[in-house]
Length: 469
Image 1 (tube, rainbow, N blue to C red):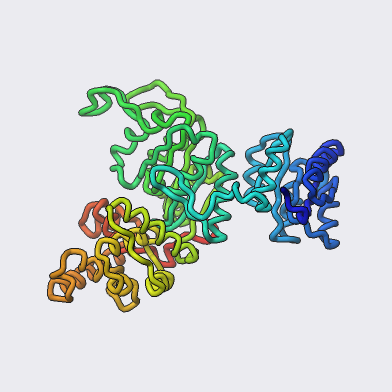
Image 2 (image 1 turned 30 degrees about the horizontal axis):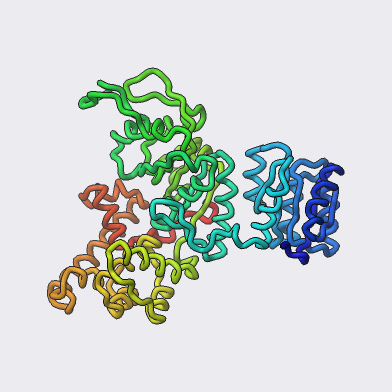
């Protein structure tokens, strides 16, 4: 049933609790070592004890659970630690997760709860592991085939049960919305509404009414009252995507909602009380946005109760074959086409490519490959010698007359290259402020966002998120 080889170190200052948990563990043939203080536990590890799992009380005299956890992670970095606490202290739980705790249990707990946590930490019950591809709803899937994404999945599961804001950072197209949906699915609010608002896609003068609603007569054309997203999402979860693009005046109102869980509709003086969990996502450079006053410092620290940094695809390339197969399966079903083979040569080309547009670019690549059915052209798109971001492959999709390298194809390739270069230059000049770049380029903001996605333009090193963001 259980793996007898697993050694567990149990640390608790209450003798009765120590005996009780030890008995529960020994029933399942675990080898249990006990310690009644953090100092004792650290001394045992320093002398050579190598537990597979540590069950660690959070509140202890002397060196408390958090300090013990921090030292344990230095002495034995790979050890899994589950925190035990008789109080649900959100601040301490979040701190424990940041320090590397794999899970936590609130005392008193049932044996079944203890079994589940141990199974998940030690892998003795594979049924508890969701697998590499996990459905999170509405044809959205979370892939965790790399160590970094498995760690993120574990952190998401922990923070899902702690009702605090979560800020998701990462380049465009890395899957921040998927992470938000995963948190919602794993949270107690899973059966309630999940709504996403893209702060960059809604014009600034309409964003306030979109979020908070309005009363009849609040402005010209407001013939009847309309609830906003926060009202519609009461008891549920709201994702504020591209939070860095929210106007400062609205950031102040959002801060009020975070603090007091209440707001007023446009044109109303009465307050509306809501219970909404706020998740936020952005790809901006946080230190730079704070310095330039684009992002309010007080709002950032409110949203930053816990941060999940989603890495770019180039840093988790072991997931590319799984994603390719998954996207191919979904696309073939959606477009009623037989799935195309993924040859060794194509897989290698995908592994060698840097994917500046991340998952979004990979998804579009599979879509084009399925539509065109030309593996050589697909591989050529990913070649360093091919035109920037697949212009040749895209040109071929317009028709057989354009695929032969004629004047039309050459003209389109040159135009696309020049356009991508101009956009990149404008973004660099404005420190990746896309609204300013759109003004500079004399195109609409939405058109600029589309072209950034189309050409897979990524931020340069000087504009990327800092390592600590």
